[in-house]
Image (tube, rainbow, N blue to C red; front, side, top):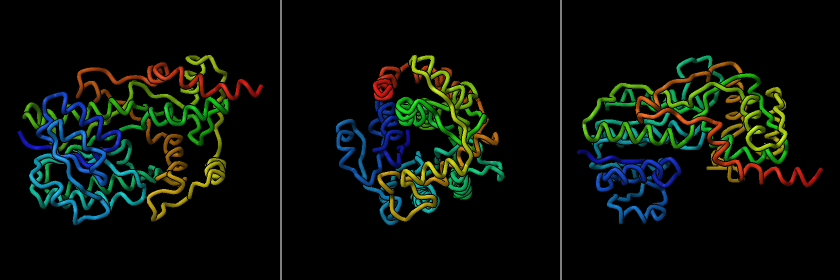
Length: 318
């Protein structure tokens, strides 16, 4: 069995993958890379090797990936800066003899008409991987349901409305855990030689296409809180982000006000949903994990108490 190197191993995705691989008895096969290795100190006791590596310091990545056969390249968070970062990791992996690379990409990126700014980072990273000479597998994840329900949901609940420039566009939002478990399934197959995933693209999506209006209605049904969906133009969506102090273009710093993204990213993302570029629904989660992808409704139900609590300030204001 070959060693697996995981980039960004201290993030949510990386920790989820690591937890499951350790539970599967593969802890001593793991090489975990992070800019902050101290965050992974607990992993050493579980058998994993912890190494420092920074996408922005390519000279650190060769030693970090040395000795690995398979790499899980978890996409960075800095939209607009990721191609150079990912190239550094891909080049280091190829130079060190890594044989197979998995990349956490994004759905709907093949169509050049897709307006989503995020498309560029992912399609260019996929091109670099294909040209690297390594075997590859693309895990094209849909929009995280967690981001919209767990992170953005409280704001929707407290304001009483979901505002978006996505219009009536539909997408199949997916649980982050389903993305993680799909990646784990592929890594286990590669490491044990159970199944060949080389040259495969998987669309990791939820089980059904839904509009934000439909998701808003489910939020209201499950929590019992009246909510409205308010579609807005791209210009109005920009104005909302401007008022929040979110920059329109990518910036050199890692974040602005602690936020590693920009409003061009989010507004063009909404436009891509509205125009149908993300209306992709597959059963690849079930093919890889052996169980169906979990629904947005089930995620809302799992966090119903938190969401109701977020609505209380609005209720008290009435």
